[in-house]
Image 1 (cartoon, rainbow, N blue to C red):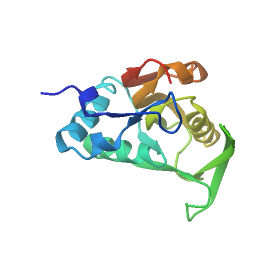
Image 2 (image 1 turned 120 degrees about the vertical axis):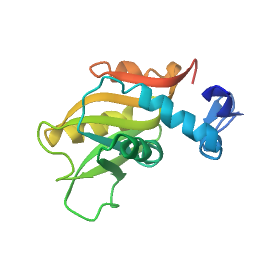
Image 3 (image 1 turned 180 degrees about the vertical axis):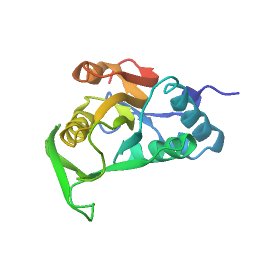
Length: 174
């Protein structure tokens, strides 16, 4: 059986020269790779007590929803601004060139609910930091932050140092 790293396609010089882009679509397009990714992430939740899984748009949905389904937990989407139909709260975060904003329904997380937050990749940690702030504003407690891949050279884990952060694959560099 292949290791999960073997399913991740690496594209050199994208989006700019010197960057090795770790492409998650190659994992999703292979049934064995996708199953291995989800199963590997579920293993990192062993022993964690939680009530709900939240996933950051959009690739956090791709891993968070099947994990929630497999574990019999509800799934909460954290979406880009303007995509949710009910009353929301929002958080703005910095991008390389500008800002972005994410939202969550006001009734998505109940006070004192224990939340696992999932995304495909941690780079600088800005998106997840904003998602954590939304969950905490609603009274939730983030008990685990889980990623398939981590780009260690961008120091996102340090930004989330107050939280239990785990990733299946760690890559040196950016």
